Image 1 (cartoon, helix red, strand yellow):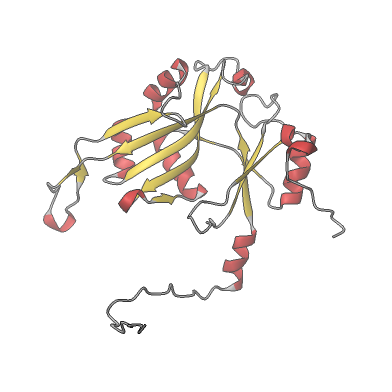
Image 2 (spheres, rainbow, N blue to C red):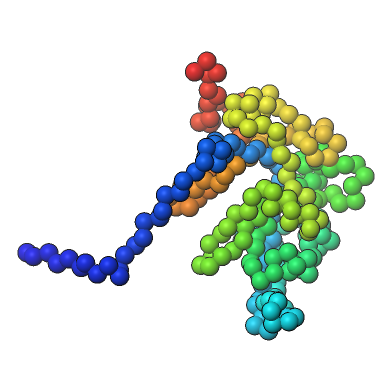
Length: 243
């Protein structure tokens, strides 16, 4: 049986170019960012822009605008119920005009945690005189691209956007190595929310420079005090510092 070969050079899949990285650049791949894990309920706010083809301003500075944008708010799943206090908080702080000014014609998803009274014993995350007894705090923002591809923003960009939207961001844990983080989580530490009396649940870690697997899933991990203190239940092991 003869095999036919097609040597049409117009039909090719280009192999990605291999970048040249300076040492200070590739060393960044070894650094991790750790944030406090808030014990609450997952909430996501999605901004859906409806693109208008009309132009605003002088033609040289013409820009597309979203005249009929929408906001949807949900939980981790379609069946998730959002606590009433979280709904009230989001109505007070999530403004469609502000989202339009920040994201323009780009779709975006703000991921965060709803926390507070009657949510996983979260009342101690709150100050006694806080008028909101259930609140929302952001831990991630993604921009929706073509074919629903998600572009995950850096922490600096997340903080910048949340400052404009007047939304809180999960606190940073000032540790870089896994060993150091393991120590403080195993010992237990206090949350940075409220008056600092509540025991923190744990941490979430991700490489400072985002890393993805072959299916484009982000490398991101969580480590909790309860999990570490139950060795039979987890695969995390602290490395011997003598190794």
